[in-house]
Amino acid sequence: MELKQNNKSLFILKNLHKRYDNDSIKSKIKIRIASVYEITGENENALDLYLKIIKSDLKSWYAAISSNRIVKIIKKHKLYVSNDEVLYVSKALFYSKKYYNSYHFLRKNFKGTMSNNDYKIFFIRLLSRLKKNKLIKILLKKTKKNKFFYFSLLYNRADELWKMRKKGKAVS
Image 1 (cartoon, one colour):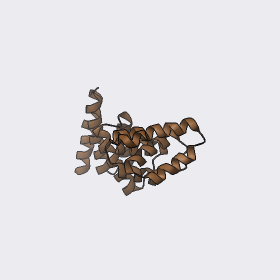
Image 2 (tube, rainbow, N blue to C red):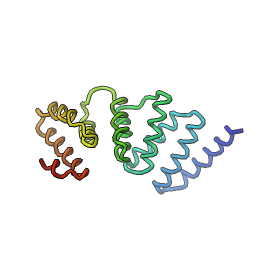
Image 3 (cartoon, rainbow, N blue to C red):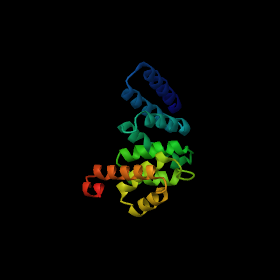
Image 4 (cartoon, helix red, strand yellow):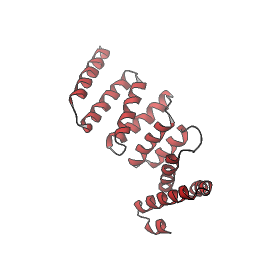
């Protein structure tokens, strides 16, 4: 009986999704569809939908909800996400002010080295929020040979400190 209700819910939600052009409403419907997928055990489908929501607007509250659900799905079902997707989820957690969760998700799920500059720029912002000054120094030291990128990292660190209302540290 319950399976028929879930199938009926999916049918209705998918039809509603087709009818709307508003991105906010579409994201809300996608969250509902993804939650039905979770209930029915279709965790890969839920994960894909949550990732689409995050990619559409990293700073929305829909992305915050989706990033939390992704963390739980990956942890519970041991699903794989690419490094780019790990970065998206971590950024969504960061923008929802879950810095600690963002850091641990990134560290646990990012595979390989930090060769990606987007990763490094985001990571220095995250480390600044977490006041991990030793790691910041290590990261800056590793990039010192590339002056342009080194100054880009310094700028992003200063910008994050400024947003944290630590203006004195940002300009020093």
